[in-house]
Length: 390
Ligand code: C5P
Image (tube, rainbow, N blue to C red; front, side):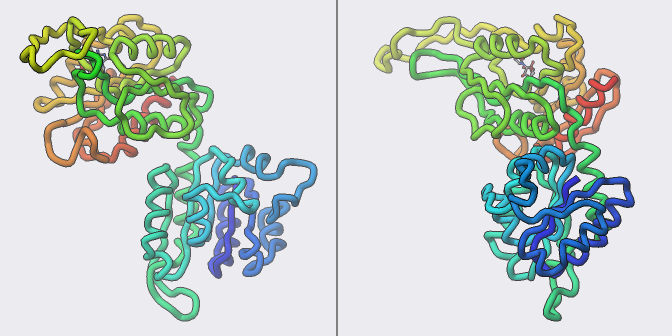
């Protein structure tokens, strides 16, 4: 594992952390910034870790050091993490060995910030931390207590035991989907009425994007089939853009070939206009009669194929969530179904949280509660990984 030490007086506590990590069985590769090396000498970390400590991109002429270190790391922790390094991580600056390694790395990342209260409370730092959290970085601390220069307040490095616990948790979930192929759908579909009008829904894609990102972070090869008008999809997964349910069906069936799991988070339209006008319908001609016909049910088609793939569906319901959800899970032949409550303020479409339950074909359900989309995505990936490991 990689331990990044950056330039704060709390760097001395990283010595204790190194011992704890080694004691827990980790091979600790320490990378220090130049500023950190002014607080604690690299030789101290070398002695504690039993490995050479690197500070510069050119410290190992025989390899492309930041690439090698990034590939070797199963988990990375930065402790202490200064406001400066948090800012660099948030925007992707790679101007030294540590930040270059972390930009290249795909492993889970834990950061333990330590700084004076003023720096921690700056809107810029708050925004950087929020960005990192949103990307799935685990942030431990800071704690409140004595700081350098005899000051007191929030900004103290979390205790090494607490950092160790976060690293162990990150490592456990780290790459449990490595070598797996997932297909994830997100967003609405738009079913055309004429060249400018369509029948659609309010889905923004956020839920599917959270699942795709989580699976990608955990090492999966992810194909993300995205409907129109969504928010910005996450970087990483292979993107396939579609507009209608029929196009989504074709994209999903093609990508599902050889996939280990399909997660249908998209709000696929259930009906489409039977006829699509070739030219824009004129207002002067009066309101058109729209006759709707069903779209193909992609999940049911996959469920009927019984291919051994893990199949996950989503259902948006306004009442009898668990009853309606269970019926859908059975009818579509699914392994897991997330039932979402829609229609209550602050949850569901467009929001960051979902009031939802996870139903499972084996009856191990997670009861209805409030989740952030990221938490829900993580819980789904836990269950998918467990089903695939059977
Ligand atoms: O039956 P209902 O539309 O509520 O089911 C929702 C689930 O089925 C979602 O996972 C959705 O992505 C999927 N679905 C589908 N094809 C459709 C409609 C919904 O795969 N035509």
